[in-house]
Image (cartoon, rainbow, N blue to C red; front, side):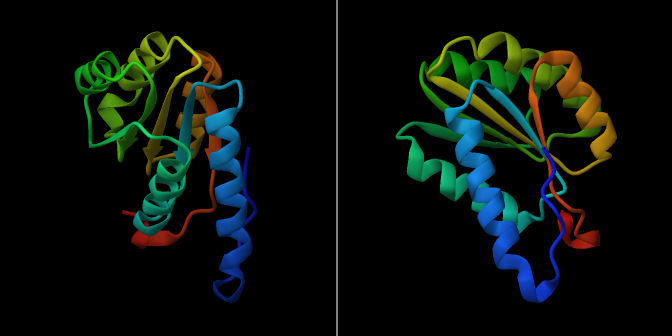
Length: 141
């Protein structure tokens, strides 16, 4: 799923689309979602919106696959936010998230700020859902 770009004056529709997409990701059939192109502020919006919808959550910054597995093992239900996953860790984090998020009560949201094409390929090969946001330039860290 791609969310259409917005102008600075029209960012509100993009944020509303993002919120709707996060809600769908948390309640839909996909247990693992990769979000690309989100600024730090939008990543915080993702976390805030998801926290409103679930009582159990944990946010990991630049996590490894081991950290994601441990978080999912410790929390049998809820959401794990794997925020700002490194390029070298994406495939391992995604594989671990897909393997461990095995029931309807667990979700993993991965944010990644590198090439969306790689994230889209990774999502397609793992069964995850890719949510591509418009790139917002250097401020996307």
